[in-house]
Length: 360
Image (cartoon, rainbow, N blue to C red; front, top):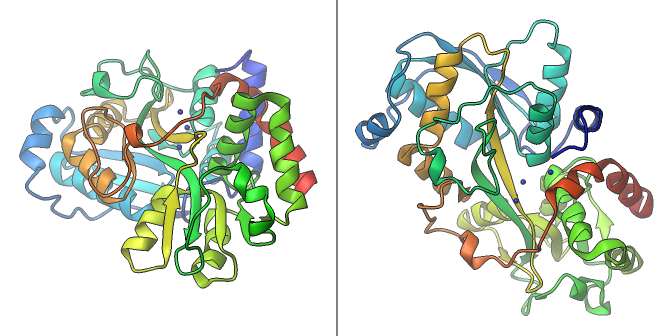
C-alpha cells in the first residue's frame, strides 16, 4: 500500500509498541534468517545498475531486516551481492516481527537497513530518531514523494494496493464499490483480513475512515451485519476464496491476487470506483547501523533500474514514478481515496481495537 507523521515522540513510541505487539502484521512470510546469502547472477542489468548505484563499499557485510515477499527480498539481496560483493545477513519476517526484534535488540542494535510493509511504522522510526537520513540516495528524486521522506529518512521502493479480490469461477459480475459488499447479494460470502494481524488491512480501514469520517463506520458495521468474516491475516483471508469456500476478500492485497492468478488460481481483482488505499513499503537506514556505507549502497541498489524491475516482476507497484509495471495496474489506473496518513497514524490503535471488537 500512500503505505502517517506524529504529534509527538510519545505518539510515535506508542505506534511502535503497537506494531511490536502485532506479531503478524502484513509482511508475507514467517520470520527466518539467512546468513551469508549466496549471491546469484542478477542478470544483464548489472552494468546499468552499477552505473546508477555506485559501489560505495566493496565487500564487507550488511544486516537487513525485510518484510516480504520473500522471493523478492531474496532476489534483491542476490542482485545487490552480485554487484557489490557485500554479503547480506537477512532476517525475513512481518513488519511486526521486525519491530519486535528491533525492540529486543535496542541495547545492542544489529540491523543496518529495514524494509517494512507499513509506512506509519517507518514514520514512527523517524519520529523516534532511529533513522539515518540519506537524502543523496541515487534515484531518490524519482520516487513518489508522498510515499517517501523528503529528508531521506525512508524510501518507499514499492507499494501494493487494496482491492476487492474475487473467485472468478464463482463471481460473474464483481462488485464495483465497497458499499456493494454490504448488500444481500454478498451475504456471508466475504472475508476481510484482521487489522491487528495485517498492516495493509489496517491501512485500508484507517484510510477509509480518514477519508469518510465517523460515518465510515456505518459501512464497517453494515459489513458485520451482512456476515463479512474477519479471517486472520492476508493469506488466511485469501485461501478460502481460492478454494471457493468464500467468494470475495474485501481489502485484499493486490500483488498476492496477481501472483496467484498468474499461477492459474481462479482469482481476479477490482479497485472500487470510490477509491482505495495504496500501501507503500518503505526502507530505512538505522542510525545505529554498524555498516553505514554498505547500507547506503543497498539503498542505492534498491532504487536502481535493476531492483525496480525485480519489484515489478513480483507484481508490486514500483516506487519510482518513471517506471511502470506491465503485468498489473499502475498508480494512474487505480482510483484512490483522499487519505490522511497523519490521522491514520494517530488513530491506528483505537481503530484496530474497535474493528476487532465489532467483528469478533
